[in-house]
Amino acid sequence: MNPISFFYYKNGYAGFEYEIAKYIAKKLDIELEVIPVSNDSILYKMLQRGDIDLAANNYLSLHHSYPSNFSYTASYFQSNLIAIAFNEDTTKENIYKHIKSSKIIVPTSDMEHIPFQRMKEFYSTDLTIFLDDTSSSFELMEHLVKQDSVTLITWDYLYQLSNLNQLNNVQTFKIDMACKMSFLTAHDNHTLLDTVNSLIYSLLQTKKCKTITDKYFTNNQLLTVEEPEVEKNDNKKNIKYKKGAISKYDEVIKLCCKPYHLDWKLVAAIIYKESNFNPNVESPYGASGLMQLMPETGKKFGADNLFDPVQNIKAGTAYLNYLKSYWSKKVTDSTQVMYFVIASYNSGQGHIIDAQNLAKKYNANPNVWYDHVERYLSLLSEPKYYKDIDCKLGYCKATETLNFVRNVTEKHQFYVDHVK
Image 1 (tube, helix red, strand yellow):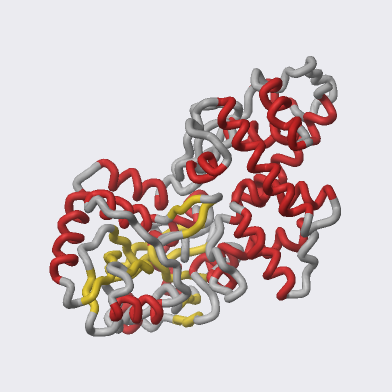
Image 2 (cartoon, one colour; image 1 turned 120 degrees about the horizontal axis):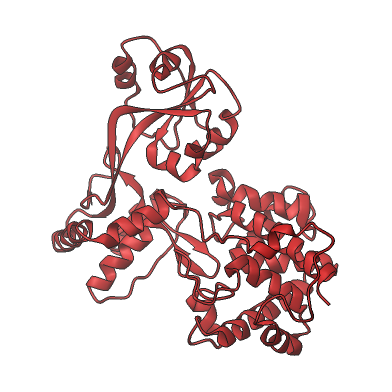
């Protein structure tokens, strides 16, 4: 499980390769079954035994050490090897000179099987290359962005996922080496290989392919909404709300909260941050409606149409009550329960349980959110932690959840202070 192949989002599934596989399964009119595993060796054995038909784990065509009885499918994505320079004075004109004079770091976990001698020959000079087998590209990017005279060699698709291209002190230089991402199949399953290849070629000709690619590599941030004008002055003490004036859905929210003894202003804060009270919003990952529920969650809690405001709020409050009941048995302090509920609502309960398990493992307090469970949730975007044996759901888009908890609690407090 990783941000490219497959990961759990809220109570649904996401992942670039997952969506490619889902397209293939739909075209074949079969049900897609995903079996998450922790490493390649397990995938290889499952392919050999015929337990699975396709293996997905960002397999690149430059890999040449996979077992000989497997075949690559057609490629559905290509990326270049790039050098990233972290220096405010570096420009596109002088980046080549900067690279030659800087310390070059290569994360071996992401650059497996790359011929580094060829890289040296490309620059026609002796380069100071350091292989790092302890950190991923993402970890190194976060660390090295604060340093000058350092260059990182990684794949362009990882750089795009990192959002470093939004910073001014980062420049990239394309190295003449490309990779092609593919699935693996059993070598002797020619019929499946031909069928999958045909469907991949077909997908590449469609707008859907660009939509999927942009979702993960260009527009990889989840739904964001603009602040309404009245809310831009949140910090001004002279703002007054009339009774029931947060939104036109106030009475529905109150009615749905009443059976569960939920704080309606907290639910309103969640709705505001999820959809800005727009019942027609749908995120790139399929979360829909006012409370941005995944289809699986909506069905579980009684909503057939997530774009219907009443059904959406009914299902959302029922789900919040479920989360509240669960965390109230695990965490005694009511304020901490609120943090855990909000976090679980955004990322899915399983990711918060994983972060709690890591907190226990590293002697932090598993019943306190800030500086404890929150800290270990933030680490679930790093391979060292999301591949930990105590993490059942793997990779998590943690930054989104951390911001969500802060934003919702701030908005909730604002409503408590200003709404009667």
